[in-house]
Length: 159
DNA sequence: GCCAACGTTGGC
DNA sequence: GCCAACGTTGGC
Image 1 (tube, chains in turn green, yellow, blue):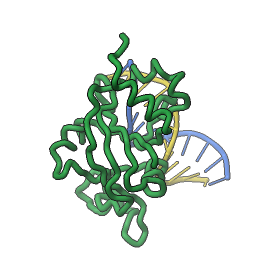
Image 2 (image 1 turned 30 degrees about the vertical axis):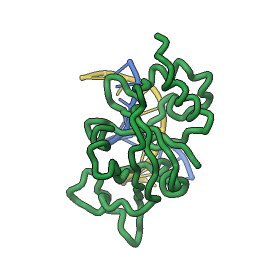
Image 3 (image 1 turned 180 degrees about the horizontal axis):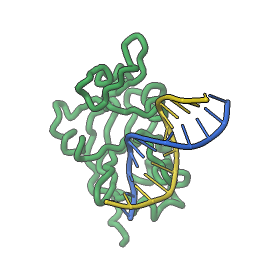
């Protein structure tokens, strides 16, 4: 089983939107970065879990845990000229973009902010989220990082 | 709103 | 294949 982190701006699609979605499940679509796509297309497996991260907010933070319930399939938003994710270079015979489906497992008991994660950068090791200038919207999380973050969830923030 | 990081595009 | 221009991301 692999662990991941998925970024989303809550103004576009936040954890509240996922909670409100049918079966608390959503296609993770609109990813238009090759490295992020490759993770989803090549490495996302049924049952993999991912941290749900809110970006572009006053306090960017981890807010939930989701599970992969469908492996990669065509991201048809790329075919729709009316979609903000439209990409005329993608078609069914020359498929460029993929999506997966994820289902909410649960919210975190408390949001864990980026600032808090940075305080634990030594324990987290080489964490893609904390790498300088990282803008990847889909990134891997090691089993050790995953376990550490879930332990952190149970701890009152030491500030 | 600013700006650094960095991916993509396209001319050559 | 190089690289400048440009666009986007995302923290602050």
